[in-house]
Each structure stands twice: as C-alpha cells, then as structure tokens.
Length: 337
Image (cartoon, rainbow, N blue to C red; front, side):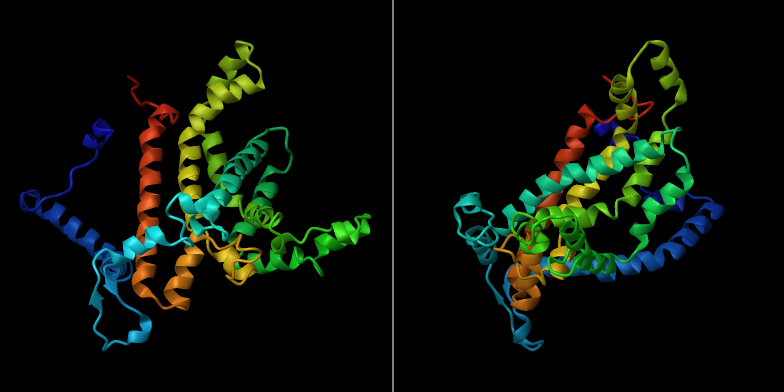
C-alpha cells in the first residue's frame, strides 16, 4: 500500500508554485476558480458542520436552549453515556440480552441479510445482460436501469402501497391464487417479513449497480475466454479463474458502497414505518435512532456523539476492507510479490 501511495502525484507546495511557468500558474488559478463553488460547498455544508458536531459531542447542548443559551462543557460524559445506552447497543452485552433490540445490532443484522443480495443480484443480472444469446439487451438494460432514476421516496411509497397487507395488489394476487387470508404475509408490519420487504424495495433499484458490473464484465479481454475454451474449462472454471478476478475491483467498489449505505440505512424505515421502530422495535436502525435523538428529542450533544461513533465505525470497516483487498482484488498490470 505504501508503494501505491508513493506513486500518487505530489501535492503542489508553495515553492513548486513559485517555480511554475506563467502558463502553469494561470492554468492552476483557472482550475481553482472552477473548483471554488465545490470548495465553498464542502467547507460550508460538510467540513464546518462536522467540526461543529465534534464540538457539540463534548457539550451539554439542546435545541430548546435557544441561541442565547450557554452550553456546558461535559468532557467525555456523552461518550460514557453512549457505551451505557442499551438502545444504542454499543456494548456487546446489550446486543442479545436487552429486551428491546439495540439499534446497532439491528443495523448489523439487517446488513448481514441484505449485503449478499445487494452484491450478487446485480452481478447475476449483469452476467445475464452480457450473455450474447440474450436478445434485446439494449432495451432490457434500459428497463432494468429505469427504476434507479425514480426518486427514492416515491419508489418507497410505491412499494409501500404494493406491499400493503390489506389493499396491496401483491397480497390480492396471492389471495386470488388460493392463499388463505390468514396466511398472507403482513410484509412491513411483521417482524419475520420486514427485512425481506426492505430488501425487495432495494432490489428494485439495482440498475445502477448492474451497469457498473456490466461495464466491468465488458472490460474483460476476450482472448482470455478463448484461451480458457481451448483449455477445456467449463463455465464455472471460466467465471472463477477469469471473470471474477478481472471484475474484482468493480465488486470491491460495490461492496464498499453497500456497506457504507447499510450502516447509514435510514429512509426506508422512516417512510414505511414512520420511524417508530415497528414492528417490535425491529426497524429502529442506528441512523434512525440518531435522527430521533437529534431532532425528536432535540439532544444535539448526544446526537452528535452517536454520529461520530457511526463515522468511526464506518471508517474502521472501510480501512479493514482496503487492507484486506490485496488478498482478493486484482488490478490488471499490478505487480504481485
């Protein structure tokens, strides 16, 4: 990893800028000018709010205190409360022993259920779309991608209507096929069905991940497949020894995005179950608990503490993924020791 970092272009220093030719300085100035709207947006709406929440985590601050209230410095009290909070579930002892499932354990449990589907479903679809025997691939790709451009909240409302246990057309079709009314799934209102319901809603929008996977598949040199065919390799051997290594960077990219998105899972339980945690507290995800702490209970300090802990968890998981990527992610042209 250190060798890869050493190959990155060096950041311009003040001395190197002074040694630039006039044309180089003008190009750099024009580049910074075009970047200035993004830089301003990043500083004003991302960096400064992050620093503010870090400061809030060491204070006792509530929205109800008003702008003229004097916040009290409490040191690490909010972090101590975080590790004692059974609802947050940071301490492993709370994960399974608590009567109410902790938000962190709920998030991890759902991630373990949804992550394999979020990776393998678009991969399988991309393999299908890359098959030369499939007719009308151009139109099928467009159809699979179209749900992704539908606003997410609108699609959640759409699926919420279709999966309604009383009036949804899916249950009506099951009823028409002879399923007893008592055996119809309650979908988002049933502890056993709520996670499959959320996954179904997510699968509907996998068109973007499918296109990324498809781009990776189409970048595999065809001569490798020709050589495998000459050697008598079957379909599974060809996929495992050629396709998977060549598209492993794309799979790794989608894996990172999926894990980060699952740790921040928020909008679906907020819209479908109104952010209440129903049924049985099974949908009170960590990010939803953070949102309720910050905006419903108006505890800005503890909400900021929850947010920073989530940031550290995501950062640690991401670093772990990048550290282990060298064992299974293959980059063409990369030297292997």
